[in-house]
Image (cartoon, rainbow, N blue to C red; front, side):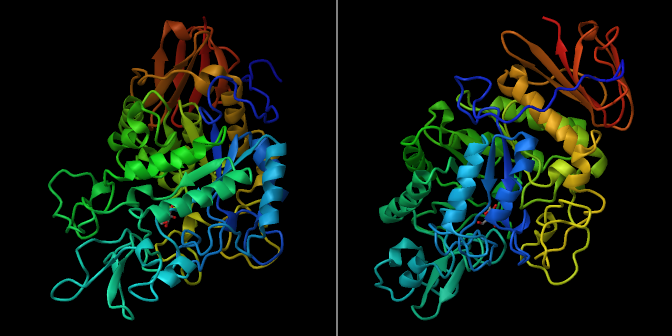
Amino acid sequence: MPDGAPRLVEVEPATTEPTHPAAPWWQGAVIYQIYPRSFADSDGDGIGDLRGIVQHLDHVVDLGVDAIWLSPIYPSPLHDFGYDISDYTDVAPEFGTLADLDALVTAAHGRGLRVLLDLVPCHTAIDHPWFVEARAARDATRRDWYIWADPAPGGGPPNNWIAAFGGSSWTLDPATGQYYLHSFYPEQPDLNWRNPAVAEAIHDVMRFWLDRGIDGFRVDAIAHAIKDDRLRDNPPAAFGRSVFGIDSSGHERLWNVERPEVHDVIRGMRRVTDAYAGRVLIGEVYTPTEMLAGFLGHGRDDEFPLAFNFELLHTPWRADALRLAIERSEALTPATTNPTYALSNHDQVRHATRFGTDAVRLAALLLLTLRGTITLYAGEEIGQADAPDLPGPTRDRAGRDAQRTPMQWTPDGGFSTGQPWLPPTDPARRNVADQAADPGSVLSLYRRLISLRREVPALHHGEQRGLLDLPGDLVGWLRTTDRERVVAIGNVGCEAVTLARPELAGTEVLLSLDPARGARLGDGTLTIGPGDGIVVRLAE
Ligand code: BGC
């Protein structure tokens, strides 16, 4: 390494043990979300599968993450691309078999990776045998596994609830003359969690997978689990309500989302996982940060151990907005856990598109130096953006194809030998093979950042309270343990900012986005240009 080049931490092989042995493995961990349909196709049918994931485990291990989370792998009629499940305890044929899943879990565990599945407890697919049975007659055995109601007195839906994807939450079942409830598409009837038999059935599903060695679940759309038992109409939204709480007809989602009884549902799930050592639940609550603490057990630690904080998915690339999002998350996370951040997922415009591809390096530095559990969405480690124009018919009715295009392994795609179910976006421009060979690539940066997070205790599990008081468009934080203090700073603005801080003099540069920076800072004056960022260890 030439004199004056930044000192970079070498990538170490993944280990199963957290750096801080007393903490649960998920604290400070990095979780890699795989959308199985789009990751790697082993059999040329154009659809990603479990064997494809096994074939590409090296990539995941080299990235250095602690766990993978697979979006749904179960049989599904694909009205919501797998979030409508017809069989909770099997693998969809296009993804493989239960034996393939076992092989994936064994291979992953053998390489120090944990495996999380997606649990979709609030609704089934319309062709799930439970629903087929329930809709057969008003007095069908499983009728009350779902939520049924008679038409309103003058006809029409029983109340004014609106589904998350638009339209009434109610669909008439002509054969029995009643409406059934669905919080999402009509093809996703809601399970009735007020029925203890439903709770028991889903708990059995959880045990089925936990017994097979699955390390936990990301729990889908949990805020929708329980609805008002009197099915009261939602009121018009009052001025000032958060957008999270308003449906597309301008009504507050008062009676159909986040009902207090949902906490009993979560406690029940938590009791199931607590019977197994080292398993985790990550709640997808989709609520403002101030409401999240309730789903994390308000410090009683009897609900979700982790729940996604989606602030950063909705925060613009602006210093004031980023600061506020982090400050709120820090202030509002109960001491029993840590924040759970993501910049991208299968439902949202990728952050390379939202923030711009020029921002992805600094975004990675900021994300991976934050206190908390970090979730990455496959493809972000090569800077993948949304597909700008997709030819052909839309696959996802809610318009999320652009963030679900296939993983780009080689300059010609490398995802499938057949016709991919969605075309890759720009493999010639960014792909894993080229970036793995280039120390200056986005992929190499992700590897270094994740490695640094594993190796530097302050970054892995250190404290972080609030933000550093920094000028201009600088954003940064201090991470501390009893033994070390590490600072991460980035410039999200358009102008260089010079920072003169005596405590920075002579400090060790752990990572710098500006390759011209040396292994130590000089006299404590630091100029950070637009898009530049730095991680330094302060002297003891
Ligand atoms: C999932 C979506 C899905 C919805 C309904 C969400 O939280 O992430 O992809 O469409 O739940 O299951």
